[in-house]
Image 1: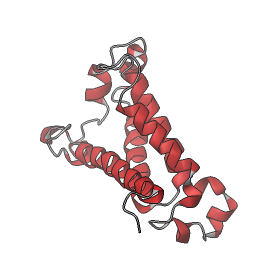
Image 2 (image 1 turned 90 degrees about the horizontal axis):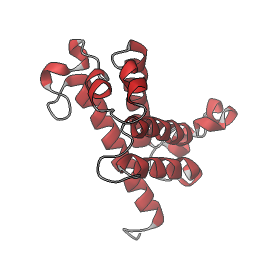
Image 3 (image 1 turned 30 degrees about the horizontal axis):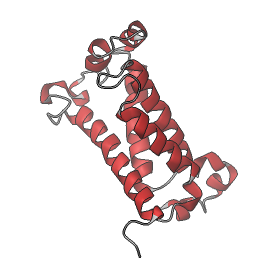
Image 4 (image 1 turned 180 degrees about the horizontal axis):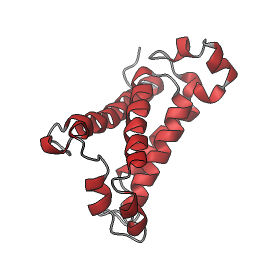
Amino acid sequence: MKLFSENNIWNLLRISISFIVLWAFFDKLFGLGFATGSNKSWLLGISPTTGFLSNAPDGPLASIFNSLSGNIMVDILFMGGLLLVGSALLLGIGMKIAGYSGALMMFLIYLSLFPPENNPLIDEHIVYIIILIGLAIRSEKQKFGLGKKWSEFQLVKNYPILR
């Protein structure tokens, strides 16, 4: 087995992205003191979108994203998206829907920060989008994780987007 085979690289990318997404979820949920202070956790009733959406956006779409700040439905969708996308990537299940919905989430974050601070067009969110779409496209080739077992469920057979 080659350490840097195509499958191993994709597996490492999948697991790496899952940790990035899940870390964001747990940091916002518990206020672990990294991006989210311990006194600003979602469990304390603080909106996980307020700090970012009310302060970070300053581009042409800032007013749209500022208006979404603190909305309970936006909070639930954002935190649910982080948890579900991160978990699916970690387990290797639902790679199509996790990849595409994760890419959409990253695109919305990218739009909220447009234009990027350190480059006129590209930031890490664009790289995440490319990786997530790549994972969704090659979901059939996924060997490491629970994807093979997952694809045997009748529900997944009936709805291929769940692969």
